[in-house]
Image (cartoon, rainbow, N blue to C red):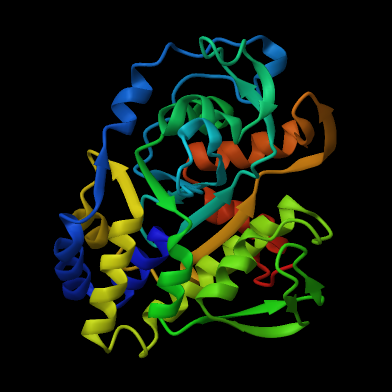
Length: 331
């Protein structure tokens, strides 16, 4: 969500991007997430737990943002929370292409020991946030992918409703009519206009979808693309008050690592448009039974290919070889 708005800002023009990034800089929450992640013990795991071999990613000039969508309901402690949305956003060195790679919450991955909470081993990746917060997720994702994390953005998904209403709603295309089991709302096949309430239902729905969490990931990716398009539309960019309200709301909903310079980032993204975004999901081969319930078994060969493209800043070429990822339709 934050990246979609940043790209929307950039598309409004360099001057607008920097002006509004400075406007909200002081409103954004800050946390030394990367510093705390680097202070954690280095992950050492048995070979069967390792997908990518080798050390740190080569220096390519690309930048990697870890985006965590967190459900921070009232009176919930961190141990009750899960990061149900985990995305690795890679901006190419040329700054003319960005890739959003989703890691489904039920992905079966190695999580290192957490004293008093977890002995170490494989489980669902969304447990990492409950046991160690954003720093542990940084460590786990970096170990899984072999990719260095440059910045972290933690987003409160409760803001989806307010942000969607500020931009006047978004349009998404649904392939097949489906009813949300929690609310009873039915999304019809074809274009659906989502106000804030429906957008929250849409991006959260999991049960009732043919592919469960995988379809929810597709919906979240589709929503982000639609939000970026809407921010660039005349309905938002041409109205300074509405744009200011949007960015202030986003600022309230996000916490970023201490070193992220929003003005510099807006400047770097000034050439991007939403059509320069591509979305992917880490490959899997089905499901595996675990102590934590049914989890997604990762496809080692497919993941290695994707992670190598991230490490070597060749994601644009990766998408050219996997055109199926470019479809922009939800479940």
